[in-house]
Image 1 (cartoon, rainbow, N blue to C red):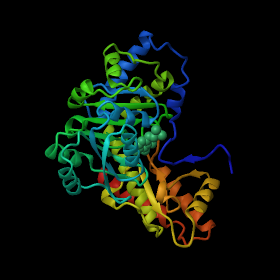
Image 2: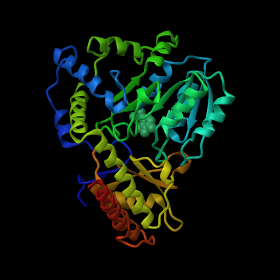
Image 3: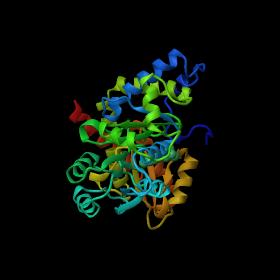
Image 4: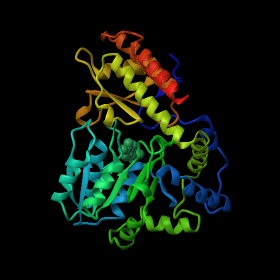
Amino acid sequence: MLKDKFRLQIPGPTPIPPRVQQAMNRPMIGHRDPDCSKLVHNLSLRLGPVFGTQNPVLILTGSGTSALEAAAANTLTEGDEAAVIVTGAFGDRFAKILNSMNVQTHRLDIEWGKACHPEELKTFLKKHPKIKAVFLTYCETSTGVLNPIKTLAETIREHTDALTIVDGVSCIGGVPAGLDEWGVDILVSGSQKALMLPAGLSFAAVGERAWTTIQSNSHPRFYLDFRKYQNSLEQSTTPFTPAVSLLFGLEEVLDMLEEEGLEHVFHRHRLMRDMARAGVKALGLELLANHRDASPTVTSIMGGEQWSVESLRSELRYLGLRVAGGQQHLKGKIFRIGHMGYADPLDVLTALSALEVALARIGAPVETGAGTKAAEEEWIRVSRIDH
Ligand SMILES: *Cc1c(COP(=O)(O)O)cnc(C)c1O
């Protein structure tokens, strides 16, 4: 097979659009140059609609986890109480960050593969009246579950004064977000998932209520101090040297999102989810998440009785398709197909086609053509409604 022709369909990093790749090759500019100031200023405002806020969005240099840690370090300190809703490996990461800060962490562990629902959150919040913040994961990448952040944020507002802090790393840019409208206080993301860039930038949208806490929070911080980013942004710059090439790329990404229109981008992601799910089901495979909880950006599929997930993944790899395995206790039990960012319905068909061939090649029972057929029918059904 062609060594350099492979399809990267893992839930991040994701493929980079050629025009974004090209934009990142522009000659370097100084980070205090007026051109860079204009770029930083515009990008922080143009990111607003993607995060659902009127406020400029802070841009940090670091992978997604840097924004997760920043969200915690800017709002809490040793001895504070906080809640973490753990629906998978990334909720668990938030808990680990809080533990490292000696924050008293109360975990609400949800079975992996399910979303957190408002009733269970409400009961949990009543047990912990002293918490100062609730940490949630929007798309739990390890399971392919999308937590209903809008209603969960409402529940938090109704029952406590705690801040709502959300990890949107694996879905922002592919699903709607409403920092202002939903009453979310901090929403963070990273560059290498639905935002179609290499890893290296992270983002934080911060609401008014959170700023009050951030200003008075005594926790020691330097590189990740949101106050520095905000003060610099008022001067149209960043406190430290930003990843300038990634900013060039981000400008192109925002052009692309605006050209297609955010509503169409979200629609495309939902369509890819529904096609992937229809195809997988038609092949007789089981999905980890139910339809209500399924994320438009990543689909988790259960392994079968008669074949191993890891041999399927290596067969797919040989055929030219890279998919992800499971994390922690789901390792070897599931595989995950990413369909976010620079991905379209034909990519889903290609993945399903490769899946059929790979299943046949490892001797798993499969009706070739059944998966792609079901996905095509879903695509056709949805385009009829569109017209
Ligand atoms: C990818 C991801 C992160 C960040 O991981 P990094 O490797 O630090 O970029 C955080 N949360 C979620 C939900 C993710 O999918």
